Image (cartoon, rainbow, N blue to C red):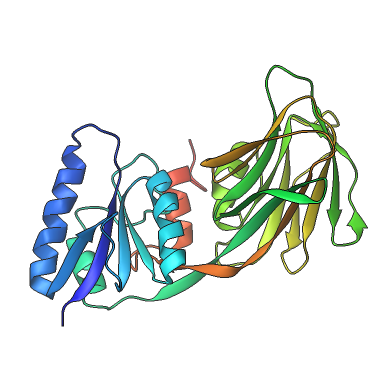
Length: 272
């Protein structure tokens, strides 16, 4: 019986020659490797893996489908940066080997995020990269109280705060000068956005304990996960964050390392 592989492509409504090329490569690989290609959202009852073609945003969307069905995911980069989508379209030999089942899987931690108002949960999402609490631009700074299990952190008065996973450390967190964490580690990065006190610095904490963030002062704020799911928050709301029991099964490019990707994408260690 042929194996089923789900193809999750970027859909922006416009013709994309790179995507057309990837579909052609996938079709040829499927013939050589004797597998069925099923395009999302036409997902069969049983399938072996997901291949996401696009940028990191497409990969993030597809990752939630992969976790839901407990299958590994590989990313083909036809976007801009491509931290998560590690395979380039021309690397068809790697695609062939993946279709033949010759790949190794690493696990990436995810976080579960709940927002509670008057003891009622009104937001419940999972994130691979990060959750972000930030003010609406029309209102003043937020005042946030953070607790790591039973330990209280200093209050944050800032435009917002990012809680990132190691995978997300090279995403939004990095744009606020946060640290880069090796992606298979299990930790939280807490990073303030434009803090009022310049003594606030990013903090890395083990993810075996839970975080809670209380909105102490807020005229209007937003809580989001992976930049996709968001909800309005207000004073008194409590955001509860913990390491998820679910993990993403991630297929890396065997011809690259995490550090070679950092060098290629961020020019790490290179003189500019």
